[in-house]
Amino acid sequence: NSGESDELVDLVERHIAGGNRLAMTSTPLGGRELRIAVKEDLSIDLYNASSSIKQLTPLLLYLRYRAAKNQLLIIDEPEMNLHPESQAKLLEVLAIMVNMGVHVLLTTHSPYFMAHLTNLAQRSNKPTSRKKQAENLYLNDPRALLTMEQVGAYEIRDNKLNSLKDPDYGIRWDTLSDVFS
Figure 1 (cartoon, rainbow, N blue to C red):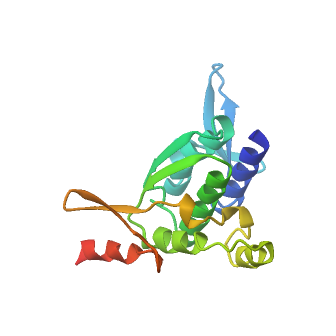
Figure 2 (figure 1 turned 120 degrees about the vertical axis):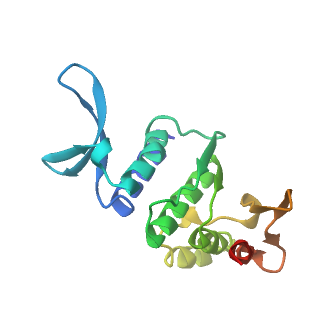
Figure 3 (figure 1 turned 90 degrees about the vertical axis):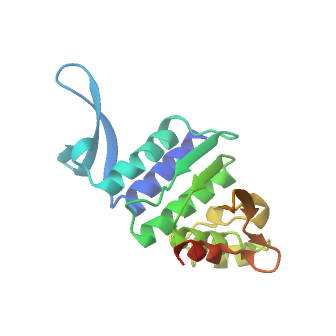
């Protein structure tokens, strides 16, 4: 699975982190630290990195060192500090992880996440249709397409957990706007 995980690290770094690469480097005192390679000969420490890079770092470390089939990955608001397009790309990476066998549980307040999740979960079972659907994704990767059976979406309302899945519509994420009324 490390080959697939390494490929996902590359996707995140190229398409979401703007080409900035996370690296573990040696320190002068013999320790190790995380640094962000921003150019061939320039790196910065994680402390001085952008908030989006800091947000992506735990996911990159998980993918690089821990990701395995049947594991549970819990992420609280992974969309924080990300541009809407980057949010959609990140969701596609998470969907690929689901198709690799990683169980992903996340919380979100992002309508971009929910709208794109609805798009990803409307997968066709025909290989030619799936290829065509994937061409409309940010990463153009059919592995990001999910089935409704792979997706659960819930809200807590009146101290009850309510499913947002609708047999006629898919995922009724529009209920998120009720919170802001």
